[in-house]
Length: 301
Length: 292
Image (tube, rainbow over all chains, first blue to last red; front, side, top):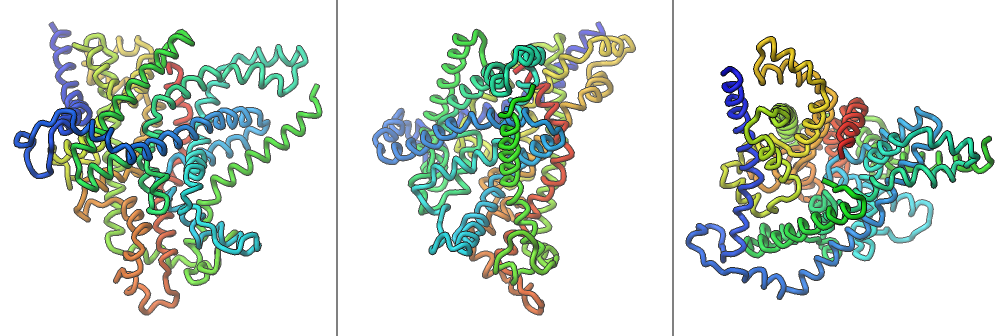
């Protein structure tokens, strides 16, 4: 009897939290309806016209905009995927340090950028790289350049520069998970290799690298699944570094949705693009998971 | 045993690490020395050491519009938000480890699924408006009360705690909630500390909810104030406050000094809190990673 009452209480005490999850994660899905109506802000949805897939077709017809935005999104994602082995390499190098203290200092200081907001990153970047910034000051004083460089406003360098910023922010943090993987490798393997006369490089290549491969693979698949979001913080990075000179090269999908949907007020069109993006991302995620199952025998989630 | 290549490897390795570490630290060091430099001398360039030490920048940015108020809003959302997130997420995580919970699996899945999709910016914006969270302090707290990722980490941790402790508490007649507050929660401190770091840093750094949903100046966070000062040059130059500040001051404050000092003020809490808590989350994260 007591247990039954206990179970009911337990259930009742969980309900409010399930409701919170429902409110903030599931209710917004009903907002997808806006994509199928010709919605104008201010008029209730019930009084607007149902237009079916009009806005999805529209998105395809607006080829130029969408192509440009997709190119940027994929380019930024591709470059960051290309840079993803850097964290693994960094972790291997960290692991090879003999001095524990030095290693700890390096690890603490290089994970720091991960914990500051994109607005602060933007602020730091401005002070370092703007036309009157530190970099130009130093280069001018050394007479290496005559005119100040403008990295923040240089559309040719945007993709590379944004990738470099992402690497700066996330490299040390990304290494933590690999260090965990390295720590999980059986130390007997290293000892055995040493006895067999394997040098440092040989040990790294024959033991450490294969040891972290599964981790690398999982993270790679997750990266591929989120290509359309160009990274976890895609929108924020996009938003703070956006300016009119680099707009053509920096504007990615999430920013585009924001621009048409909220800044311009084209709610239905913006929602339609958002839906398409989410659907493709979810499909990618599940295909990557299935791929992982087939290749490695177990799934990512 | 050691080969010659090992020495070279060490040299190259230490150099690379040192350089990258420097690259990560220098920007923070730069804004620090700039912020304690004399504003007029700083305009000519600061590089390794502050020029003309002064705290005038700090004493004066807090006289700018809204600065102190926003600082407290940021602080408040960080403290309340973190406490609420931990309380709600950990209780739910504990509940879903209990076989006695009706619909246990369904509830857990219901929460976990939210990790893999979100409705998108515009539906989110509309929903928040409909829930009456526009210009409402609760908009900083309620949406993150239950975070799926934290629930997963907490559940994984709680599951590996020894069952016997709970059973003996139950023998003594404790209910689920009492067991949670008196046994499970105190035992979960490693993972709670980890999540406290994530949640508080997240709260301190988040600005887009503020940007999209708040038009009331009294709810503005420090991050957004900084963003406005960075992007809106006019705001700083024509700010009547700045002119008032400069009137009768020996050293005139420059817009750059203001921006840099605000950046420093927004960064300081992270700099202070983070190094001390690092060992917790490295451990906690690895605990979470075991299950993958």
